[in-house]
Length: 333
Image 1 (spheres, one colour):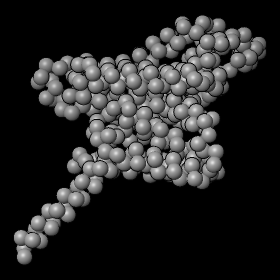
Image 2 (cartoon, rainbow, N blue to C red):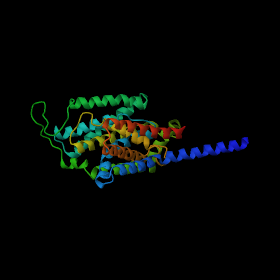
Image 3 (cartoon, rainbow, N blue to C red):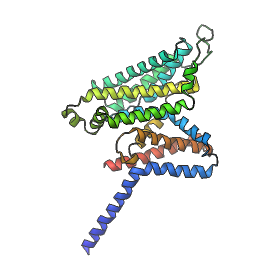
Image 4 (cartoon, helix red, strand yellow):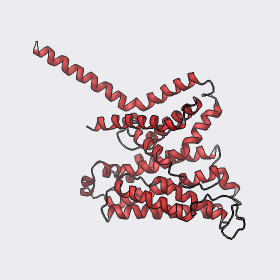
C-alpha cells in the first residue's frame, strides 16, 4: 500500500512539475493570447490595423530602454538609472536643436557620447569601488535625474521657447530628426535593435561570455574571461540604449519634458524580467524582452480602450510583473 502511495505521490509531483514547467516556458505567450481574446471581444476596434500599429509604436521606446536593462542583466547586474539616462538624452538633444542650432547627426552623436559617459561612471563605481549594482544605479538614478533637472532648470525645452534674455529661441528640429519618432521608422528602429541584440548575445563569443559572467562570475574569471571589462561594456551599452530611447521620445513628442524618461523605468524593468522565462530561455534575452513589452503594451492599450482609470493601471502592471517574477524564481529554486 505504501509503495502505491509513494508512486502516486511521485506521479503527482511530476505532473505538477510539468504544468509549472509549461507555464514557465509559455506563460507569457499564453497571457498575450488571452489578453488579445479578452480585449478583442470586449472592444470591436481593438484589432483594427491602426490600433495594432499604435500598440507597436507605443512599446517602441519601452522596448529599446528595456533592451538596455536586459544587457545589464546578462552580466548579473541591474541598471535602475536607465530612465534618468533617457531623460538626460531627451533634454540634451532637444536643447542642441533649440538652443544651439545643431544638425541631426551631431546632436545624436553628442547625446550618445554623454550616455556612454554615464555608463562609464556607473561601471567604474560598480567595478572599481565595488558598490552593488542595484544600490549604485538607484543612487545614480537620482543623481542623473537631478542633472537633467538642473540642465533644463526645471523647465520644458521646446521650439520658440522664451530664453533667459527674453527673446524666443531660434533653433528648429530638423525634418530628418522628426521622422525618427514617426511610423514606420520608430517601429523599424525597435525591431532592428531587438534583432541585432539577439544576434549579438546568442551568436557571438562576446554575448556568450556575458551570459557566462551572469551565470557564475567566479567561474568566468577562472576561465580567463575579463569579467570587469564585460561589465563595463554592459553598463555602457545599457546607458546607450536608454539614450536611444530618450532620443526617439524627443523626436516623437518634439519637446523635452521634465524627467521625460522616468515613467519608462517600471515598464522597461517589467518587460526585461517577463522576458526571462519566454520560451524557457531562463536568461535575459532580446526576443523575450520584446514579448514582455508587447504584453505590457497590449495590457495598457486594452485598459485604455475599456476606459479603466489611469490610476489603477500600475496595480495591474505590478500584478503582471509579480506573476512573471514568481515564475522565474520558482524555476531557479
